[in-house]
Length: 443
Image 1 (tube, rainbow, N blue to C red):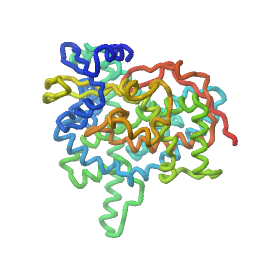
Image 2: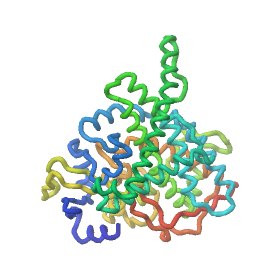
Image 3: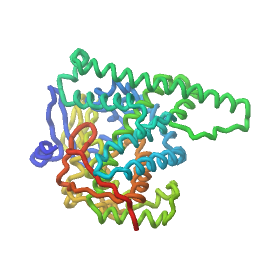
Image 4: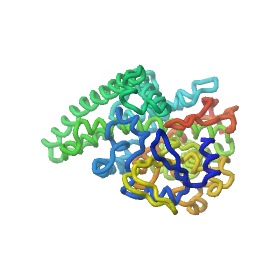
């Protein structure tokens, strides 16, 4: 990251380079990024995404062209606000369990280890309708398979010779990757098979009773099965598995690491923590009731804190596109068959856009200040045609978890922001690990 920042300062907002002989360009100016993200022709993901294709196949994250357009259109209703509202009880239940686990620790904890299991519980239940109880130590095999897959994908992205499939799959790492991906696919396929039986039974009973209605909370998988029932040619069994795996991949690690960074910032800045808590108690008072969607909408300052966290530490620090036609940027014509890199981590630290960019300052996202910035100067969820379809889901989940913790616990850390660097991986992780003390909060 530092190397790229030095080049940016020396060369300017359009940086040309080559990777293994392939033409590449890095764009840093928001107005240039908008030309890529806001053009329906530039939706093909960059070469780096090829390393996750064996797991996700052609799901929403990795597909392109007609298939992507069709899938995006089909899946958008599954992230409608009314659907997301049904997930709030799942967020609440897992946030309360996480808070209980943290309250039982007398020593500073590796916060990511706890958060990761919580978000995995959330994503499994919302995506697949299956409670796997990771926070209670269950389904350890699935947890290890997901983590091993992520490790190998990272290793492959950082080792250029592994981009060649035939070389990669001849290596011990490639063979292990094949085995782990098969385990993940098998798990997903079994869950889909079991859920389909339940879904069909419910549908059959509805067909017999015209006044019947599906009262049970629907998971993402249930929505996909309903699509398959209505359009079997457009949503096959393979397509369902692709999208469930994609939702699992995108909805677990990204949210987990965002929460880890947010909790670290909240622990490191007591004045920010107290301001969040004042907002929370103005909403809940002394009540122990669970958060509702109306409560979450009132958490304006907490949302500002989360946005500032994502400015400094975007979960996905690097985005790329593969051009299928020429792109005109300023006085440059960038030819087709070029890999375009966009680095939110650096763009969010542009001194021309953000005064004192290394400072943690949630007030940057007060409405009056935020509206003065270019909309593509802040892109933690990407933007344009391929913006993150799950960003509202993630924001609601984060608000529930953070507010639940802060209603019960006081967070502190001996670590300073300056002590913690970033690991520029596929997901932006802290280095070293962040340790936080959790003590009971008393007014």
